[in-house]
Length: 108
Ligand code: HEC
Image 1 (cartoon, protein in one colour):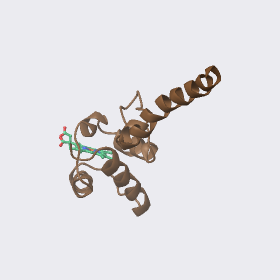
Image 2 (cartoon, helix red, strand yellow):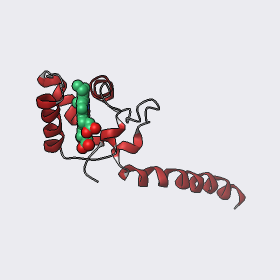
Image 3 (cartoon, protein in one colour):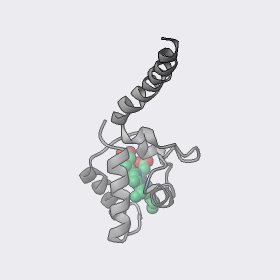
Image 4 (tube, helix red, strand yellow):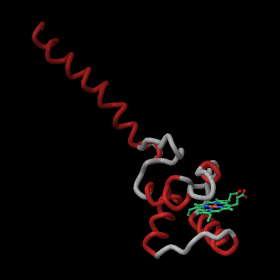
């Protein structure tokens, strides 16, 4: 009897430990990443590109405080390119920026 208890206890403890980890699978993607203390941007794939291109004229907080669809993010970029002196991006860089913004700063 005593030896069964010895086996059962770690099993129960193991279950308690695993359960929250499984439930946690559904957390927002953004919660798995750290936030850059300098810019406030989420440190996820694309972070460096966004930091280098999007925090030059204004702080990242200007745009991380809102969320947009990919289409609207692109419209914002085009507007800055047309009127605010934002430079052109290569298609690859633009993809990376839009992927990042769409994923981590969607409409709330
Ligand atoms: C060449 C300068 C420049 C760069 C680089 C730049 N922006 Fe801007 N952006 C501006 C200016 C100027 C404004 C208008 C600021 C204001 O209204 O006070 C602006 C406004 C915005 C707005 C609108 C904010 C609002 O009030 O609705 C968003 C969103 C935005 N920028 C996102 C970005 C993103 C994302 C990047 C990187 C791809 C970027 N910006 C890079 C100049 C720039």
